[in-house]
View 1 (spheres, rainbow, N blue to C red):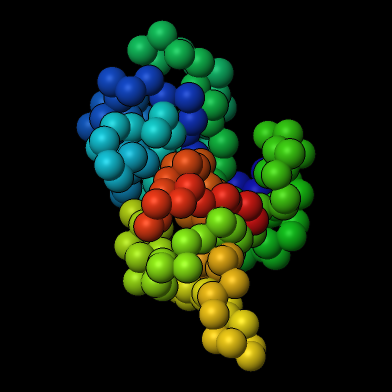
View 2 (cartoon, rainbow, N blue to C red):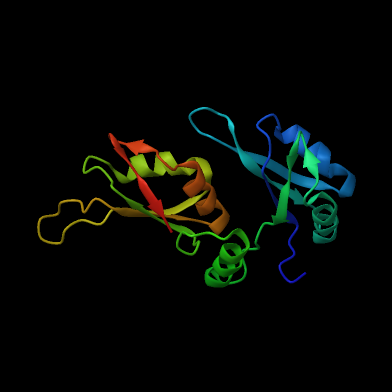
Amino acid sequence: PANASANLFVGNLSWNIDEEWLAREFEPFGEIVGCRIITDRDSGRSKGFGYVEFANAEDAAKALKEKKGSHLDGRELNVDFSQPKSDTPKERGNQRASKFGDSRSEPSSTLFIGNISFDATPDMLSETFSTYGTINRVSLPTDINSGAPKGFGYVEFSSIEEATAAIEGAAGTTIAGRPLRLDF
């Protein structure tokens, strides 16, 4: 398929499933070079999705075909290619939004963060969101005249997947006493 990649997104995982178990499930299809389950930073509990990376895309495609919709620990797996980073964010966003019926803005690698406390610093944002991936940039715009913070900001990740994980994982997070509002 056009969007084939060696990296698979695996969703709807039960909380019992750890990386070892996930890797075991996918090993029969080929050599696995990476496997991670995204966990909640505070509780350490699985967020119910993860990624399995194969050494080559053919094996990933085989695994996708066999595993999509199969049951693991009583739940039906949602398996998909983790979108490669080469095509444009807009196309990726469209594919993902149409597939998952997202009502949020189109996914992009940059998160919009609203309702930020005026006491928040870029470091606080980095710390909160670095769990979900590599942060390229944090920006907290200030008023041009007064220099006061405007109460919103942006965190740019190195991929859409990371930003998506952050928006799902950090929903409801509070910084300096205020719950953040997240969107793409």
